[in-house]
Length: 156
Image 1 (cartoon, rainbow, N blue to C red):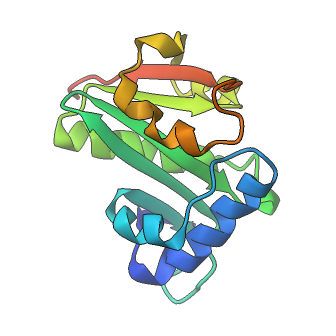
Image 2 (spheres, one colour; image 1 turned 180 degrees about the vertical axis):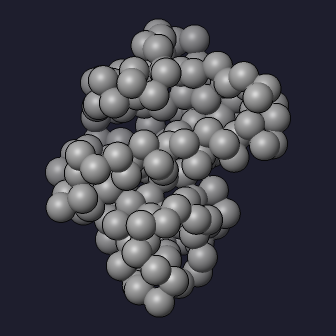
């Protein structure tokens, strides 16, 4: 398996994977238009370049000069518990470091996964209002039951 930036060829696979979990209430759905608009934020997990199958996806959305969000983390169910989600989040964190982001947060239903990666639980209210724009599209809004997690990145 290899993690790399997503390409146009990956969009339909990303769409299918994210929306599979959205139907289960585990992620926010994403339209094809949204994925094309934000393609450069996404990393994918694939077996090789010639395969159309996307086994995992994760995005890094920049919120502010020193803050970004891990978004749409999904791994195909038959690939769970193999460290693939960790590879995707690490790619996003490496990308955040490379562009000078100091803090990265995630809203998640799986806080233990993010704790293992070095994230700590935070109060949602400390996050800037700008991040709540996606929440307006959530069927659970305003009664969010996700856990807010954050990591402060070192310069190394």
